[in-house]
Image 1 (spheres, rainbow, N blue to C red):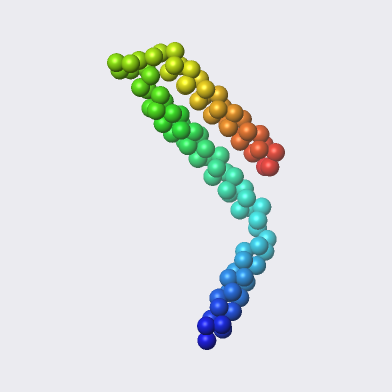
Image 2: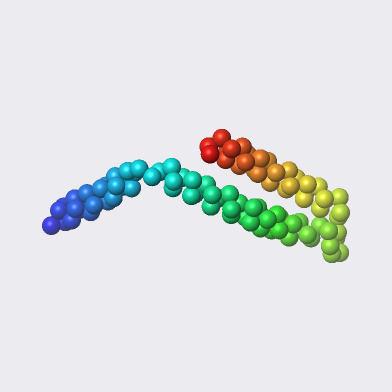
Length: 95
């Protein structure tokens, strides 16, 4: 009984994957690409905000070190800019 149940489950799952691959993959890729393009600036803004909040202690407070804070923010901006550049390049190639 267990073997037939496993066989049935395997056949159902494998056939579902086969039906999913029949045509229309370009439309689904375009939909995912459009969704990523719409959501990416929001995610990037949240990342910048979180990065600034983590480095805000260097700008304010008793032990404020402006040079260290600016340096860390600039490094963060350069890394995030590199990620944005790579993402934009890859989206330009694929679609």
